[in-house]
Length: 268
Image 1 (cartoon, rainbow, N blue to C red):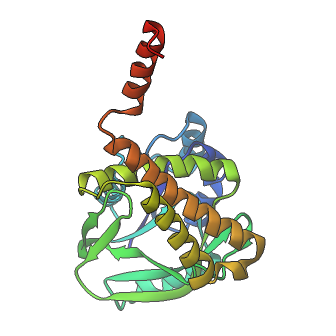
Image 2 (tube, one colour):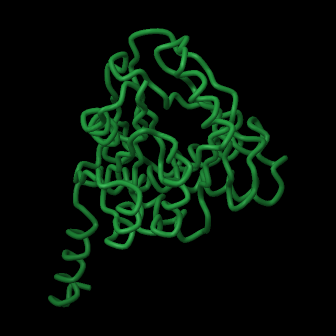
């Protein structure tokens, strides 16, 4: 069975980390890179491991995944983000399983690292993700941001870890928050979300804090757990503030133009 590893690169800082990802999938028969705005330096690193690099301008994550399937030539597809690493144990387990597959697709046990610490509590533990597919059993992907797969057949589960080195520093976290907040706000606006008000913002932030820190036991993760819970609540808060901006009768840019007019005319 031929295996194609499909690797996604999204963020500029991945030039410092993508090589490690590509090394861990080098056991595959083919490596496909889907580029969604990588720097020239990042792409130069990728070219050291594969000539099969395909660019897309789409902001829809499902489009990236479906493009990977389209370009891959393997019987099986392994989807990996640039900040993920296939452990040696998982590589051996995949090779063993594909020699005599028992399912159409497989969930992988993803082990997350947040600010350098292994996550043992919260919404990312345990974290199983369906990433290994028999190509002709993968119907496709849907979802603009939180993409999900549709499989024609049973889904099994592998035990060895897929490591996820997420949120390496506060500045990259803020950059990703701004990116995702824009998408999340647009999706909610298109879905006709009720008008945002101050009390809704307070309820959203407080509920998310409670769920992450108390219900999901984020407080047991130490300092990193507290930072994660507060920051994820903040990220959701920002998405809803952006939605509030988009719902305004006058945009903020238009509002400030009106203020300028009043200042110049002497009305203010």
